[in-house]
Image (cartoon, rainbow, N blue to C red; front, side, top):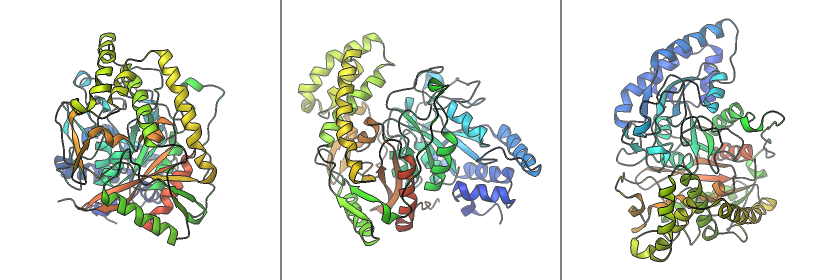
Length: 494
């Protein structure tokens, strides 16, 4: 097999690793293929924003020599990959799209990156993000705009937008993303790749921006998560990444529970397809109805309904309040004071100001006291307990990821005034966070898997949510679902 074959670069990582192991291809050859494709296509996508080519070549050669001696570094031995530019990679810039960090060059890897390197991965590049990973579009003043490989006039999503675009275009076989506002799931949905939001608190985000470089605490809501072109690759990377977080050492060990289901027919599936608080567009609804029929025809037990006693109207305001608490920690005392003053204005004047009805919850969350946080945390736990009853009857909940597919770039300011057109009606930009809120607020695993193509030939994904720490179960369902949906399909680059 020649290394000029474009399809080779689009193989899933586990197949590439098999080729590396049996000598079909060398690590150096594979690296050169991805570098060549990046040189060719990145000018149109701007997904890879920094590279350390010579260091990657040295490590690829070392990986080949080690393999020739019979050594195996780990599960990712000799596999080239890129990393989202919010994670520290020693010797490379880590900007998080923020001008104040344009000269930030970490001396050591982020903890999750170190685990990938320890398993044998070769990091050759960084992928683009929005400013401080704080948008669902990937553009910033440091590196510019990243485009969707299916349509360069549309966004690839954010904040892991550069990662998703690079995966879809075959510039990298694996990526390390992070997710607090759908930052893994939305880009995977927009670009037609796989992404996994892990259960909260298992994987360390030490060495990730935000917070500021050198931050030691693990953040509320946010998680690290793998991104790939197959569900099998998500599982592979998940096993590499799991390790006792620093704050739980020593004396604590975690192992992902294995999926119990051997086939699709073993799954009990709830399809939460729509909610009046955030209706999805007609093509998405049609695609979900077709998927329901396809699953039923395949012998899957599938029920279309919302979770008993829980709705987006309850979840979304709590999510934005909790998110505000995370974001507010990076603001000054004066900024938080101003947010506290303006929150009541938004609460009663959101229609006049053109804001969504939950906007004041975000501002009040930014300015909340610790006592307020504890009160809200109790409300979240009570609602979470109600939601978890769903998993007494079902193994996974299938949900939309967003109310529509990838939209045309919109970098207008302020973000709070942006709109997204859904079925001909302008909707609040922040409504795009509504369907990712349940899994984030409740700390649950959620896998994004390609499902269908919408009018305009844009990909769409489905969100597979599981019970606490059932990450392997949601990924297993995604892997089996690919037999019905076709899984990843590459865009035609031109």
